[in-house]
Image (cartoon, each protein chain N blue to C red):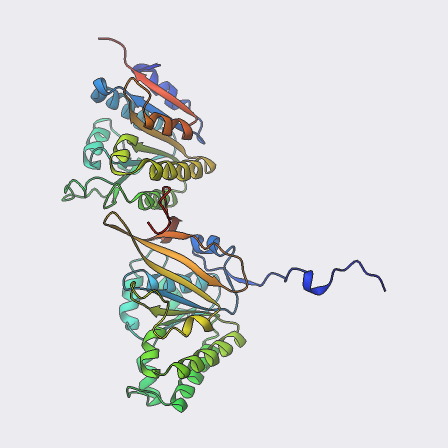
Length: 195
Length: 259
């Protein structure tokens, strides 16, 4: 278990060629989520030449971008693959640093947009954040999702891309936890200090 | 005399030189590229990316020092150039240097007096010779005819289309050209060309199409046939991006066959 204050340190120390699940508590989701974004985007993402590719399936990228702006993240350091705005009919003001996928069911298109952004930012050290495994699971059958993660994560690991999979987990071990455990090298459970 | 050399028939055929398309995903699928000198049918329905794939094939070739020729029937060279400008891989200097040549085939029809609807056998011969002369003149090593279907409308008869393709294919092969023939087919037809004879003549068939996943449409590519090389026969999802075509495996998710 990792306290909020320790997450930054854990994420900073991760090897580039690794895939890591970051498991958040549903009852503390908002605070956990902010702590994770702060750690990933600011503390790891601020590192030299790091470029973050953020796949947003839970919230439209505009919302994530507003949090990133509050954290003083430079728009040159982050690109979005937004797979939810079209589905939520929330595509009126596209961000210049975002590419929009019509549906979270178009998993191959998500893969290809990630590939596109990796090539566009080939000179940077890449980090991929998928937000979240739960949201992708709402829209896709588990077998398809397992295949998607297997191909994407292994491909990225071989190319020295750090991949963070955000997951909101219940106390009991769910099917999603099992799926994620097949793919990642380690899981970080977020526990913030009381008070 | 006893020799350690195995009989000829048991020796593997030497690998053929490849025309590296420059489209990463396609070269991977083809285990290194299209065998040089092949004539390949690029078949697909409207909006599946046939012209874009063809143009990238030529631009990548021109960049690599292989002169490239696009014979356009359906779209004007001006419009094609405008469309190409949207892609970051396109370079105007390739056109200016003559490394990439775009020719409006209707202009050739007019010049040869072939403006009428149905061509005779002699006129088909004249058209074939003119195309081959143009290829020789430009020194093209990569050629795209967009589309074979449109030319086929003016040839009409199956046996004449067969003769046209055989003569053109032999001529282009002699000139060392690797050729893509664009074929427009409706997705429901279940074949790769307008007459059905074209796919038997060519060395390869690349099929582009649309796959539906619960109402969402994905562009897909599949190499159905390619003589002279092993290749993947799996289906891939294709994305047209500003930096060129990108491909990923088409996920199945334990979907039952045909599902």
